[in-house]
Length: 178
Image (cartoon, rainbow, N blue to C red; front, side):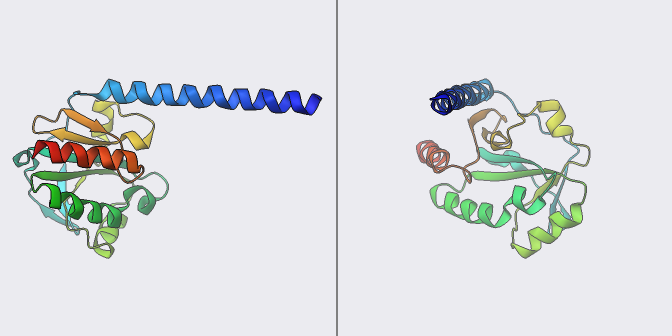
């Protein structure tokens, strides 16, 4: 009987914690809706470690992905998966850019991953983590990916690689804007 009461208490606790997490996540997503993301002007763009000039303002929309590679750089970046997703999105619209902003301790790893994955899209190096500090991104890394318009206003938030539901939302939105 005691064991059953303990089990029920644990289940109730998990249920309420789960609801609290979903509520917090929903609040975070609403908070970012139509908010402007500030992209520092001094970020340098690189493709395969070579300095490149890119004007992301030419796109009507961009998928912005901020990555702090603390821990496993390859796990956080998922360049091969992003390459596949970008090719898929280009079938829906050629006017969606991809902005990768990376903060890491070792940019050589980023260059090597870019080469190994044949990721030929620019990656902006944020040596001082300015992007995160001025925008105050969520601690939840799943909320570091945004679909932004040409004025950097957030239209969608969430990482389409982490959730099929978010991926479908991105695709639906992109189809509507074409």
